[in-house]
Amino acid sequence: MVKLPSNSCELKNLFINAAIPDMEALPGEYRVDMLFPWPSLRRLSHRKVIYRERGGLAGHNVLMNRAWGYFAIEEGSCADINRGRAAVITYDRPENSFFLKGLRDFLRCLDKDHLYLGRFYYEIGTRKVFLGYFSLENVA
Image (cartoon, rainbow, N blue to C red; front, side):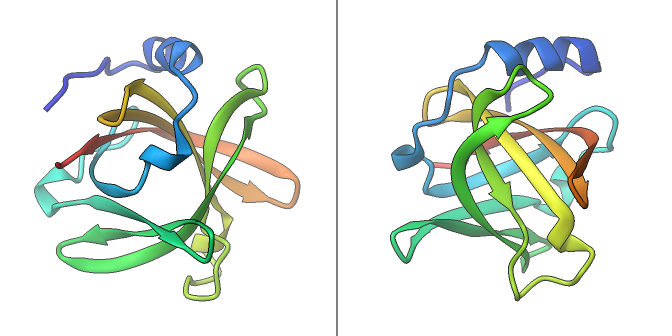
């Protein structure tokens, strides 16, 4: 388990300076650790499973061994971080409840194929509300 900073300013700097993820390397299973300002859900075995689907990338969350929060992933940019390129996780899928469809995650790579830092938002119309940070650590 990698120890990351616990304050917003340091996490923002890490995110800005992190690399753009290699989309081809993303498929896999990752432990999720909620960072600032949320409590960690690691004890509940929170994971993201990413796989190839219909020529693109998709996935779902796992919490207490139950799948939920289905998403698609594409390359995009994080508007409030100098339009920095990132992998964008979008939950606007028919399998999800109305509430989940507004979630947007932006990933940058801290350690190639192993560790990613994410910022997550809730989208309301054209406005994105920043909610916090999380990390993804490859379980392989």
